[in-house]
Length: 612
Image 1 (cartoon, rainbow, N blue to C red):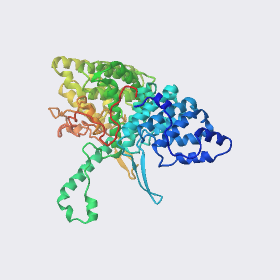
Image 2 (image 1 turned 90 degrees about the vertical axis):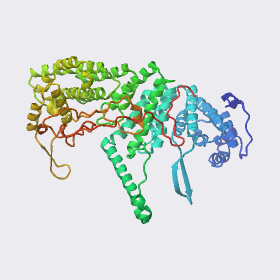
Image 3 (image 1 turned 120 degrees about the vertical axis):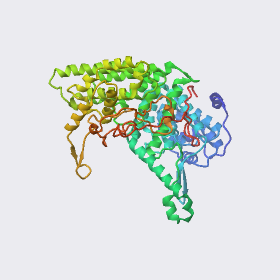
Image 4 (image 1 turned 90 degrees about the horizontal axis):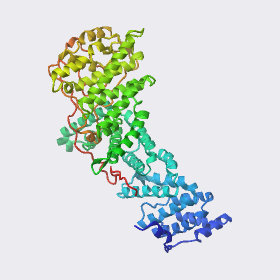
């Protein structure tokens, strides 16, 4: 590859052209003679323009950049629209040299140059016309896309050497050019990949870029609930089943019937839900980026990992924590915390501070409690000693809260008043359900002594009555396990609470319907099972699935609360009776590797940490 200095001193190439030199043309234009200028504009817009002619023009423009003031904005715009990326190496190098000269001599063109480069972060469109009518409009499947992306990043770094303030001008353009979230998965994948790649050589932009990426991810995430995704998968499976059954009779059907009954099977790693498919690909890119930043040659680089963690926790606090019912985006914290126990403990400490700080909004404190409970329950890499340390913080805080309320005038069940307390209680119950075996493992007597010292009985018997507010499925399992080990007997309180439930009449669906609100906290478990097929492979071995508790845990069926439509979906919540049914189980293992999307020319899920 020729160096920049060689191009600056290289002689002009011979090419067929009309009109005078660029310098003469610009001089005549200022004097009012626009004939040569108009001819120049026409030649630049010629779709059949040859490489030699482009190089000839660019070399002349390099020598005349001092004259390309804002008066010639239209001309510069034409130059920036030249199809240079798909040209020969000679054209590319000459164009990069021109960009360097232009932005150093005329900084007014910095933004247009940056916009042109960022617009090439996505595949182009190929439009085929016939008689002036578009008959085909599709994404460019050019196998040289990775090469084009490399050149664009090289150009950005080259410009930054001449204009050090480039990053601050670049960020608004990156926001402006972000594709709509309903664009194809491939366009979004390419753009997000290139955005994250910018953070490698412009580290000052990393936090802002991560915020931009997460904001777009969350829009996709909240628009595709776990129920919708699972329903779409089940529909495809059912359709494929019908197609298989009808396969032998396909040749006897009319053409119309065939169109109705034959269903094309999706690839095994493709999501049936279109929004989930886009999010799955994007999460794969993000998780691959996190790993490539933190690991070099298979070794964890702690300094860089800590720096990335700090940026991610800021994004988490600002965007993810306040977002209700997101299903997958929050898993970036779950993933980076798996790299080192110290990160997981720092995350838990951060959430704990959010929960106990009285000046934080109630919704943030309740969300923090939900994250603590779900994280401790689901993270297989967190040892039992850390679980105990967190329980030793949560449970005394709950007891202290009870002490303060018992002496006051608000010692009654009220979610609006005591939402943080109920969320903390539910977190403790949830952790206990998932982790009680580990807490009792090894030395049963010692484990039981530890659990008895937590004094669950006082919590469930207090006037604030947390069993009435927490999710019925959590309450039922907590009651069953604590009953087995004689830690506390909850069923008397559950039965009393059931008798006090007041049905709520709702008519939002057009007719009166009687429902019982079983989730007054409006809570969710942020680390419920991950259902995106491609990216979930990254969590193999670090995610704890719900174990079957059909062991000898039984409860009086007559006093069990029935799950309603308002219960949060979880792999252990899909059960109505501990006595008659075994508990639901999520798939116990995921595929052991993650691959970047295999479409032709898709960006690699690798983020090189060097300057191009």
